[in-house]
Length: 318
Image (cartoon, rainbow, N blue to C red; front, side):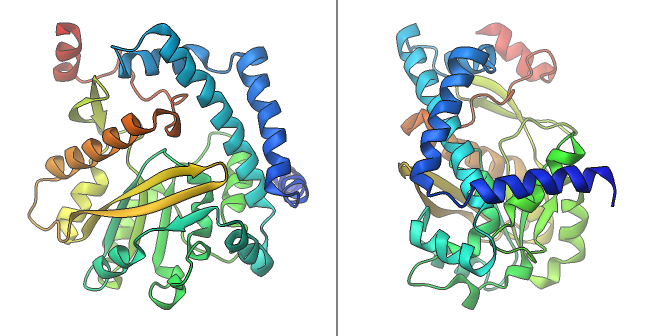
């Protein structure tokens, strides 16, 4: 066994052990982590404050500071929830998830109906807690998603981490309730996978709001800023004739999120991928403005020195 597997196994074992604690206990740990990141580490303080201030240029410093403080608390919540999720192993883990009711489907029938005739691109974001998506079949209440959607045909794309140990730990943690779940798909393999499996009517869940690290396509203004985006999922949906859904993740209260699906198009065949992407960003911006704390402000979403010429000219004209 190589050193990566050994180290990752030790870390995963610790997470699994600590994750057996009740979620409300882990939230206290998360509060301590949040305090440490905010008051001791000043974790990505420059990135967080810059992103929030540029996204909301009319807000005062005090208003920006309130959002940032609440955001650090949310980061602590994400740590607690991710550890707790790592303790939800196997069948008992699925029951634990359902009992906690950490995620609630508002309208799973929209996803089911969209998938009846064709594949689906479910475009999500860094709202909610994306680390919990490996348990997506265990969140349904009253309607068993297993009866309608084969978990072996349901794929959640993720971006590999630079650290091989961290990548291994999070890969296993994301599928803790379903240890045999084969649907975690590295995003670099997504396009080829979609072409090969297009006749299987697969469902893909994609984080579409990340800064693009390969091909950049200008979105326009997003959160008051010229923004580049990833067109790949939208372009693939248009090429393969997939449905495109917006996957909304709202915070209801601590420990409870709500998933809602909104149709961007029932069939993307022949449609302009850039228009589909713009619609996604419009929906996402509305959600962020409604609950600013629910998004990932510590992510370096805007690389101002690398932005494309059209966007850069617009930025300089402001």
